[in-house]
Image (cartoon, rainbow, N blue to C red; front, side, top):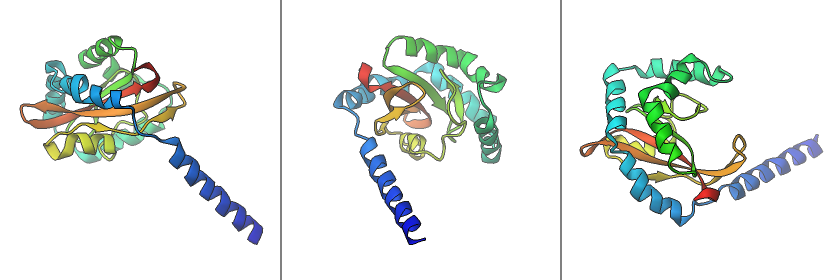
Length: 185
């Protein structure tokens, strides 16, 4: 019994150590890109219009979280997910993505962190409880947020998520997250 506990403790410590070593700070080029070109995309009229339209729907947080559970339980891409990729905003995001090889993904969120449009299926529908939304939306003030570099198994590449506010004048009304392939920047 003592040996089992000791092994479990060692495995736990190793998992913590590996997790700590795994993440790293993004290269300076990512910060420079975030503060210039990516921040400017947060003021794109197509993105602003789509976010304003979804914000005007007045979805409740309970409805958003219900959709999030449904989304996470669904394997593959189904109609309601494809609709976010095939919408005018989704097509606009794909056009932006096509301009630079380092864009692995782009998705836009409303003022509660719910997806508005995306280039690829996200792992969940609601981002409102995650740093990418909280830090970039910043309670309506808006800020640029650069996460740590992590290995993405689905793309087999090292990605960093950069999030910028969607700005309507001087107020953040949503956020945009870019998955940046650090090996291609």
